[in-house]
Image (tube, rainbow, N blue to C red; front, side, top):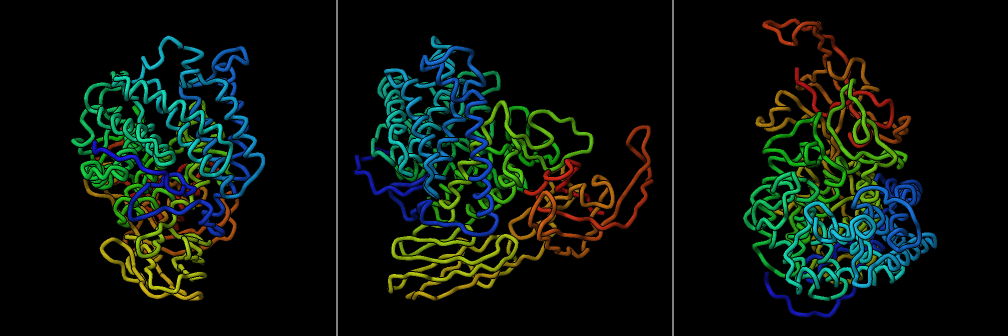
Length: 625
């Protein structure tokens, strides 16, 4: 790894990922105000419903009581998984970003009380993990292949960075730094070559370095990345691919194993590139990104084809009904793509953020904000047997990694909308609101993603020439502004207050087909409009969803609905289709065609809005007639 000189700590931006150097600078959560549209609704629901639910669950789930056990302040049994602490850390991060957006005394109180408890539970040497302190004190760092000790530490570090940047209780950062210093002492200067089986601490250590300027945190992140692929992670019973220990990071050509682990690892790899300038790190991550997008990504942006191991499958293995597409994988994908966007400035990474955000990620939460998906399939059959992780959304899970993870991303969404560029400002995602960067202030007016018109008005400008970059998504067949090779339209001028530029995107609905090698989707099509993927939910159909067949060339009719019961505002798409039925009984195979067809109207709803009504069958991919 390239040597990095000691540096002073730059002025901190209030956001999750803030490189110390680089051409593109993220904006603070405080400087991007989202005031309308879907993103504003999500943030309002997150604040009013999701976060209060999460705070209650910190007690009910055992996350906080476990730490009282570790502090010697209570008696009883440890509750939950060995990584239960991480639920609290993600909840703390969500609260910190929410406090940065809209300060509230109850958020400060929660952070302060949690930080004090963590300080009391922390060992004198800095180690902190309630499971191992209470249940297995003799196994500390002895089970790294599945212990999640560094994984939990990583989420603590990210919560502490968020708290420091948001201005909440500083004791959380003290706790985090003591733990980070302990990791440095054991795994960097102490010579231990252990690697956590679940990547996450790497990206967190880099961010802690960015906040503090303490170089050993960066060096430890680099060592942990470099040690993968050397067989240092013991086999947890899932194989070497599961924990990305099969090849050194710079040699691996495709994403493998547990999807969330791979994607968090990639975020750390790009973070290291951004801080060290080691081109080999960026090159290998981009190589895997290109293969992943081409062969292992669901139409919704979801990742993970197999329930077994929560894992990527083989290339083009993208089943709709058995798709895993864990909500945490969508979040980790956004983290990775954001860092790639900061590193390269290329719009293709913003395009994938958008696809993932409005589809795989958005579907993870119910319209009322109090139920969540762990798994996000693209098809649900009428006879699906529900369990704790399949079927309908649930209020919480025994393994509750997803809900607080969802909350922390929604609270920090403003961070991902725009960046300051060397010669101006780039807008990557569109939402009604206000963007401030230095002496530039913009007002964005749009009804995106329901409508493709985006109007950007300059409210404040320096009076000199600067460039405004607006992303033109690859899905838009035409636009009022012409993008360059990087996917951005650039308008360069000496802007004055009141100047307005409009971008009009093509929102014509479209029928899309999968690559022919995706066997599970051969002969099928899906509907998209703008950035939204659509699905066919039983509640809207004249016939059984599983009997529908789309008619190629049939018009796709747009039907806005102000308030669909259980869903809220939406835009439906209707088309002429066929209901195809066959007799049942005997083997489901025929030597000749015996189907009966009936003309029907098929109605599609945005995928992210499904499962808010009857809980019936759903399909994204429909056979073509």
